Amino acid sequence: MDHHLPASSANCAWGYFDPKRPPALTVDSGDTVVIDTVSGGPDVLPKGEFFIPPELLDVHKNSIQEMPGHILTGPVAIRGAKPGQVLEVRIKDVKLRQNWGYNAIRPLAGTLPYDFETARLLNIPLDVEANVAHLPWGLKLPLAPFFGVMGVAPPPNWGRISSIMPRAHAGNIDNKELVAGTTLYLPIFNEGALFSCGDGHGAQGDGEVCITAIETALRGTFQFIVRDDLSFTYPRAETPTHYITMGMDPDLDQCSIMALRDMIVLLGEKAGLSREDAYTLCSLAGDLHVTQTVNGNKGVHMMMAKSLLQQA
Image (cartoon, rainbow, N blue to C red):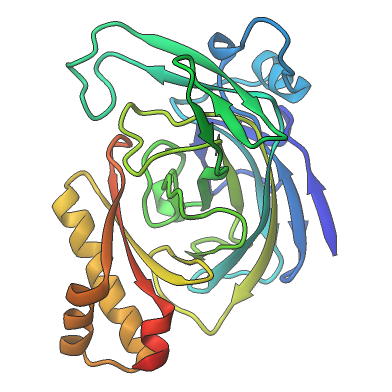
């Protein structure tokens, strides 16, 4: 079954995840949902010949930004999903919904909070057909769109939380590997899982160092599968070629430890390796990447080639 969830003031939460937010859509495990998202407040709207999604204006007019954070479309509830299970999110497609994005520098924010004392906003034209962004100094930057925020509702005892900090429910992980054709695995904390997404990125480097990527509106096609045969408690992902584990913490060292420990567990699950052999393989062939350094909880992800596990 295919479904469509448009962005709107009714279907979007501005700034937060909330385990008590009613679902905007309820589907069955195995269903596919097309989800539209929008990004940014009134201050980022471009002037000139650009398409501004009417849903973005609707959100600006009719929604309240409950706390600092992103405009998230959802949640989508999946029937039968229960706490302790895992939600498999197959990212089937990601498309641009507008011909512009924006990038912002803010004093006291980003990886260099004291180095840039003047705020700057860039509205960046996007060539959808050529799949490039036109940067103001003449560079045509290839686009690789993905959702910066994808997550389920947090544990009930957390209550409403800002979408800015990524945690066990995922959320603002800003992992540029999660493009179309990849899969995200999320531990479930509430009945229905309650998946939301937003923070569309046209392109981003590992780190997202100035605190924003090319922020834009996206349309994602997701297939949701409830997995009762999996039981891990922190997000994982996979691309066609690699397994990915993640760590999120204010300390990058702790992020690395979290991602590494989870990869050691994964290698035991997938290839039957002992902890010692898995630790060795991580040192010889695992790659730690700094996912982002700007979201309060920073992020590190470890990547391991699937081909190496097939030989193990």
